[in-house]
Amino acid sequence: YNPVSNMKLASGMARIVEMLKLGIRVGIGTDGPGSNNSLDLLQDIKIGTLLQKTRYMDPTALPAKQALWMATRGGAEALNLSNLIGSIEVGKKADIVVIDTRKIRYIPVRDPYTAITYCSSGSDVRDVIVDGKIIVRDGELQTMDLQKIVEDLENAVQELFAG
Image 1 (cartoon, rainbow, N blue to C red):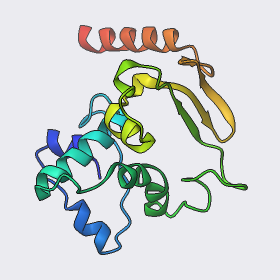
Image 2: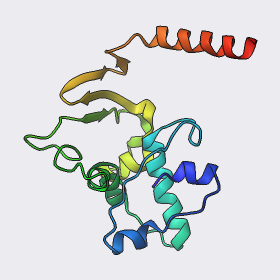
Image 3: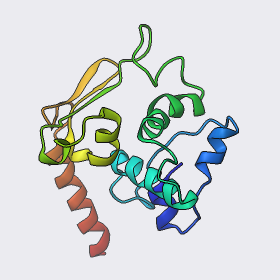
Image 4: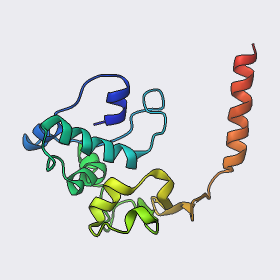
């Protein structure tokens, strides 16, 4: 389920609530940069839940906890990878995202599922651990020189459009 991509491409609104009731394994994602420029999974989770509430005209459709399940365990199950990823368990890859909730928009929200689903965006991600390796610490990429990547991309784009 790629809600922002589906909206940008006008490909319709998936019947996620019905799919889940039928036992269909559904994950939630961003698709790709051509159909979702920001690739912000946290925003897509929020938008995906709001779309389902609108589709069914039901404010209880696709609750926050279920949407986050789709982004973690549900996604792993949909990819047949639940033995490796999707939850924090001994023997699985340690893929963890730490979200900084010390912002004003989080203060009135007591339920962590609701806070992450409706208040978070990618800019709130503080730390990222992939397969046990720290990739982002305190919001800074640890494994690559992001500034050099941006410069290389800008140069490549200039060359592409100069010709």
